[in-house]
Length: 220
Image (cartoon, rainbow, N blue to C red; front, side):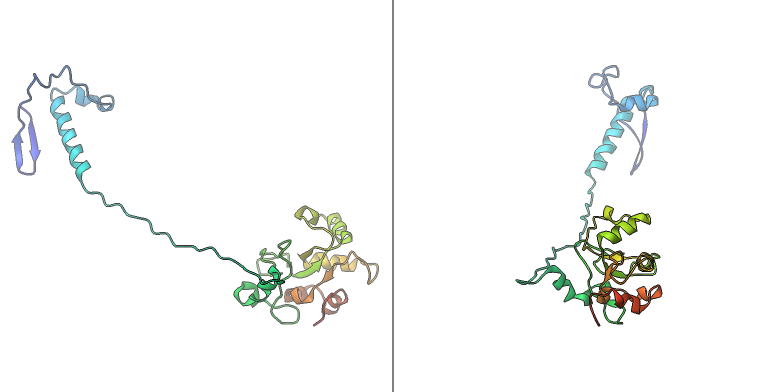
């Protein structure tokens, strides 16, 4: 007769009525193929009863279900008054943007350059030029077809970015300077016009202020 362990000590398991549980009619579930030593044991019915008993105990144990807490995110709407553009809304709230900490060539807060298309190294609309911007995209330029052709001939086809004649774009200092040096005169359209208020002060690292003013569309 099999011996079973219980919390009260070792006891003798009751005999199994072979009329109610004939060994030849007992067909365990798929565990028979996984645990052949059980089916081959002479005490297989008792072992399966014990496993069934333990399974019922485990199923009856209370399981605490934790609920994940999610932060509530509310939609943010930007509303413009009648006659006011989206750019004006951003210009009125530059203090809330990281670009407000950067300065233009006049040592004043950097102005928004373009949101259509969305420009800037950080794609914020500002010609931000962090230290990670090794190309120094700090010149707030207005591109022309002549400049787009010139840039494409130098291996940088800005038309692939969707730029067309008249688009505002934060240009690389070296590319603008290259077009400036290749100009045939002050009216050469290969040199993009410059918005000084939106041009980052880092542009002065590679371009003289007087050269920028020669093609500026705004004044101090």
